[in-house]
Structure formats: C-alpha cells, structure tokens
Length: 277
Image 1 (cartoon, helix red, strand yellow):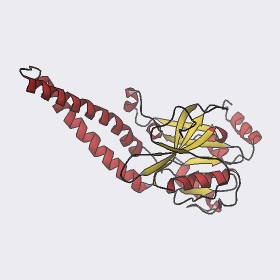
Image 2 (spheres, one colour):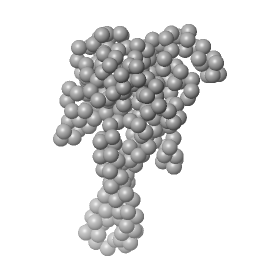
Image 3 (cartoon, helix red, strand yellow):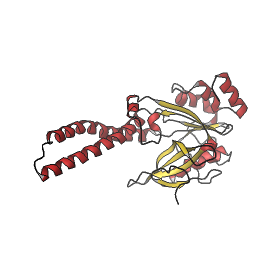
Image 4 (cartoon, one colour):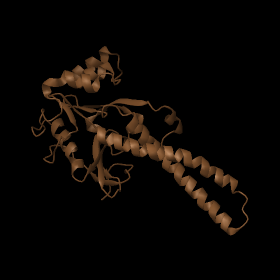
C-alpha cells in the first residue's frame, strides 16, 4: 500500500500514526525536556564525522577526475572506427554518471560540514509548534539550484505547526538497511507535501520508530515520555541553552517561544518582537 502523502518520497516504507505510542525510546538523541518543550539532536558526532569524511573523499576525488575525463573525451573526438565510437560513448556515460554523483555528494558534504551541534529540533506541546534552525542542505531534497552551492552557510530557520507534520519512514537501500524518519510538512487539511524535515536519520530497523514514538508521547502529554530522559535534566535548561542554542543564530523571539505556555503567550512574544503571524 503506497503512502497517502503526495508526492510519495523515494524509498518509502510506511506512514506513521500520531498519538500515544508504546514503541518509544529517546536513546541518545534527546537533549532536553521540560513540561513545555523538548529538544532532539538529529546528528551525532560520530555519524557526522563518518559521513563528512566519506562524502568529502568522494566529492574531492570526482572534482579531480571529471576534468581529466572530459579532456579525454574531447581529445578522442576524431572517431575513426566502431571501437572508437564505443569507447567514446562509454567515456561519455561515465562522465555523466560522475557528474550526477558529484551533484548528490556535495549536498551530503555540506550537510555534515555545516551542521552545528547536531542541529536540534524543538517541539513545544503547549503551543503545538515545532522549530528548526539548520543548514539549508540538511533538508530532504534532491533537486537544488546550483547557485546554492556557492552559499554553504545558508540556513533555514522556521516555525511549523505540529498538526501539519506527518511522519514517514524511508530506507536507503544499503546492505545495512538503514532507515530514516522524515516529517512531511503538509498543506492544512490535505495530504499534499510542501516540505520535508529530517527527524531521525539513519537508524537500523525498529530503532527508526523509537524517537517518533517518544515525540508523540511528549506532544500528547503521555507519561511514557519522561522529562529526565535527556542528556540535560529538566532543571538544567540554562546549561542546555548555553551549550546547544546560544551562538547558533536562533532568533531571540524563537528561543522565548520554546517556553510559551499558550497560543496567547506565543502571540504576545511575536508581537513584542514584531514578527508577522
């Protein structure tokens, strides 16, 4: 049965249900939680270092190989036999394949190089809002304007409605069957997807469902989501913000909004900071 969200994402495994969930586990991704909001890290240091090295080696290697390959193709333009034509076609196919690979590897390289402090995602259950501050290349896209590669520090800082976010799990087709949980941002009252947010990248098997379960329990105030499950305990909010939030470009109003306890309080914060509703 295909996903109900359109367009369907490549590698789709299943759509995830919202609400209380007994399949739950914060693991080492939960940074902090209090009665208002929780913060999940989405990129561990070990994963970030591994994929940075892998994508960097491939990208730099292709940057050296592609010009030499292109030069060989131009040099062999004088085709004299069927064998020459075959070699030319083969080299041209390899060149196109390498260019496509480089186009896919560069975003992965930028993603890991410019991700800071694990790129926390914030869920406020009192206002039903979700906040992200991440590298532009962190999001789940394939087609990008080539000019964006000239702006590696570009960020997207956004506020979403939890009601408009739906979870799906996809796999990466590797021999290790690594799964990723993605939040599909849908138009209100529809299944039309307008954006994607990485929630829990690259987990083995059932592990990809645990963070989704914990977040759902938290958002519906289920006691299965313990407020002391994270790296920082509930009374360590100042330490959490100093270590993970401060100096990362979060807007002041948004940091205040983490702790908003109602839609009215959130509206007052936005009005005070001249933020358009």
